[in-house]
Length: 139
Image 1 (cartoon, rainbow, N blue to C red):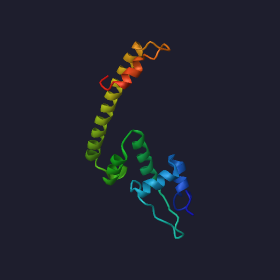
Image 2: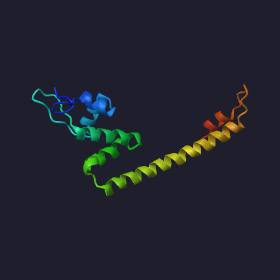
Image 3: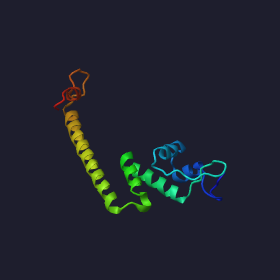
């Protein structure tokens, strides 16, 4: 079997180095996000430093909220090693617009909840401003 000291990395070693679960690595391979590695004569996968970089890139992109489709598109453009900055920038601009939209939605929810809670009596009575706000779609 390949090792970090030999011809490459095993899937387990790749998982340890990147902090990505082995099942997630398998999923990324099946879906084409992570390029399939070469195999040894015995059929074992052999990963290299480009797999480490790619997997680290994918993990970080997902933690920043990029969708699997956005990550896949960046990978199809050449990934962290070859993708055109202009094309990746376009994806990032669209993603930023989505993030800002979500922030605006969350701020509106925060405003609505804070105002409703302020008007809530907090008593044991069934008349509750929070319940009313939830049941009233226009609130």
